[in-house]
Image (cartoon, helix red, strand yellow):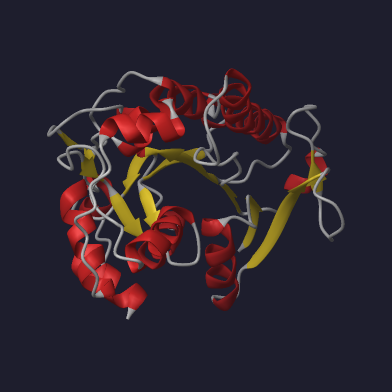
Length: 297
């Protein structure tokens, strides 16, 4: 297959690209025009510029681009940038797909479990409605931006990522230094659920979905074992052979990162992978202890 990928340099894209190539697929990385030197096609999502010729002979699109949500406090400007980086690029890509002489048959487009908002202990399959809050609003608009591609008959899958675990980047990489010093522990009450997925399983799940023609719409990209924050902290402590009892009060988390704390660190999403399980995905690291041991030992 010839696969067009945005966000190929991010945590997920950098792991997914070689996994595609080892199968014999060709990955065409679509870079931002402002990204500096490098080969391959470019686009300008903010300026609405994408050469339709880029889509010629493409068999699938994996759209992962979007500004990271956890890099600093959320100012009004930062929140606007997070929203635009997802919605503008997705809308541009979907419009170009709809106008193409030969539309790629499938678009796998990133979204997030943040779609569900803060839902306490509620078990969340893909049929659950959207929640409230900034991230839920971003995810609704992000997914809705693919509508022109769906209307053109393209199979669109919304990849609702949970917290992607990898020691090489993302949330786990940020947690490792304090936990290795014995200064890690639960956030807030620790009762909030964490919907997570090992990076290696996420990569295989994306490859799985590329060839499941019956699957469209939302797919929870999360392991089948969502855990409470306190359970996760204890598991990470065990994997590192360190205590993990240094609790961070909710008030301190809010002082440090503001609104981001309530939306991402303290919010509870107990999402489960209903679609992946129904379509026979084979989990390799579906339990939190096995996943962390595999990554860190």
